[in-house]
Length: 292
Image 1 (cartoon, helix red, strand yellow):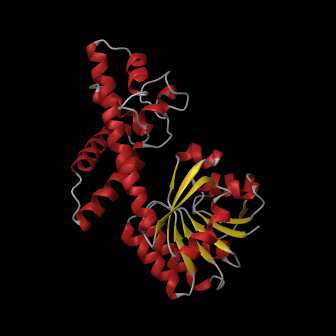
Image 2 (spheres, rainbow, N blue to C red; image 1 turned 180 degrees about the vertical axis):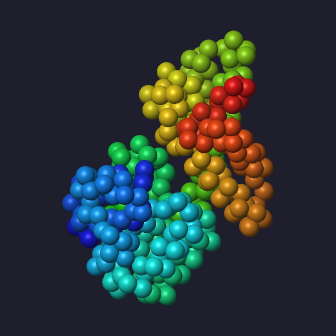
Image 3 (cartoon, rainbow, N blue to C red; image 1 turned 120 degrees about the vertical axis):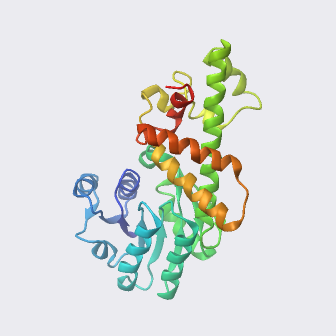
């Protein structure tokens, strides 16, 4: 079992750290929010007084933070003070440029590093069916697997530094666009007098099938795992989808890629969030498409 430092104990990081504790790892955690530290302590995580203390003497350090600036600030603070054998893993969802800059910080200190953003939402963080999309040197990704496997069910080696973040933002651009299309289809069905059940039974077994439909259907009483069954409580908040769509458009602009559907999805989620729904599950965008 490994000695793990876990920095960022929020809605994703807290349950992930708890799963490492359950698996027998020795986990020292830190977060700037006292309540999150208290919750992590209840789950068996040793709570440190600072990020540096959480990182001291660890075999693996995992960061789960809101944005690239936070990751770089944290790594700049702790990297000079960690043991030479330490593996640095960032599980945040951030821009590719910041991910590569974090890898550079680690490399200059002689440390192995992996960018490993996750897919699966807060429910996945608790139950551990997350998918990790990993970027980094092959040997670093291999080293990360015994720890990541205790927090998720699938580890995908996406390539070199920054590739994990690239895969994550591409995946979530697909998710955002397909959820909008799925919600639009149900709204159209309603106006045509077609029942939710009829559309679901037809589309879920034919060419309209998607994860947005069969795992996260935006209307209630069709899929057990859908936030629509719980008044669109997240889940995966619209604010987080908006963040990921912005990252995708930033990457598209920087690389010269043409992503018109991604751009429209961003605009619609911006409108949804601006109308007071940022804290709701992103599938709740169907209520806006109905004109509510």
